[in-house]
Length: 459
Image (cartoon, rainbow, N blue to C red; front, side, top):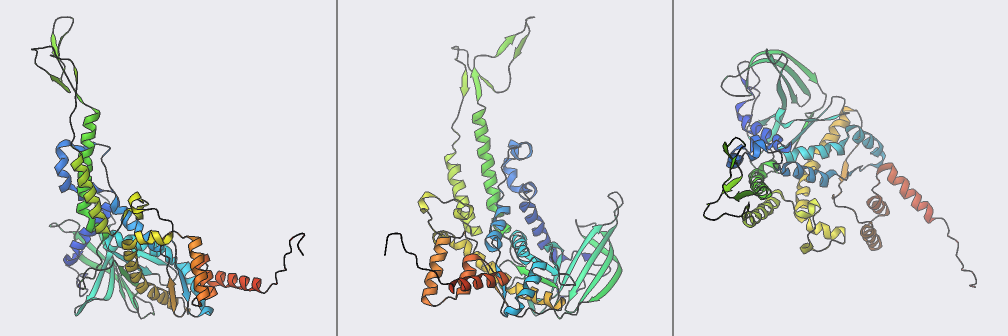
């Protein structure tokens, strides 16, 4: 961890040494998320190199759990956008305008994918408070308090780029130092270090400019994956915990693929394959053919063999089971409802199957609940507006069952523990002005007298 700004100075190496292990982990996580498995799983795949399965086969299996798991949790949390309310209804319109400009719920979905992929989501507000911009986690270097390493004092966003050509590179670094009330923008010239890859030595600070924000908090916000230890600042990525299992699964599937290919291209056997050309020269058929002894003229045929795939199938099933445990997912989360689990007839039944995934979504929700009020309050100050205290109502991500929802709301209303407005919001998904308009329309209909209907011929 970094406890001061000494790492951005002439003669210093960038990125700083304490952060390089984290950056290496992020690089491998991003490769796996993007489906580039060969480099990261090189050690595991060496077990099948002798078959040339990975390098030369176009049908090698890439199991991209590393992409789907972060995405599915983002869908559960923010696939159905939640609603943000101002406790003072007079300020709801200003709040709606602010969240619309920030595209807040879209940022939550995008940020949750980032949390799963690399462990940390970092976003920053523009100086006018009208944009919420993502910051790649590999460009973010937090400076923490020596006495409390989970307390971030300042946020540094920095990277190095080549402003020259490939043959004649010129490396220049850029840094933003976010402090309460100010942002310092810096550029620095540097050269590649010779002893380690992707490390640079700072040779000169080219420029430094301070900008006042007028806000007593930094404009950068950190949303980590739920931590596994009180000593951690950075969140653990979902991809990191599943790497070894996914690598083993890909090796297993490659082995099965090889066996099945062998069965589709069996080896021929038969008598001596020597043949003569018209001029009497002798030649032999080679490759994919087994010559049998000539004691008796053998009948030609194809050699087949038992691939012994049952043990492989058992092992793959156990690996997948463990993968569900490590990732806190389940088959139902991916749309697979096995007959042994019964038929889900309602949203409540589906929620019971998704108890572990939804528990993880709740932890992610707590992380965003800590960040969203600060983001909105800071953006409101930058825009010179007041939205007051806010409340975020989240959806659970499970498909709605309209009939079940209507029955539940009816029961709550009869028991006197639910207001009409909240019931309408729950059933329709409306919020703000749209919700007020709908409630007013329903109330107006209640005041209209409905004439009695008399059936023909009935007095």
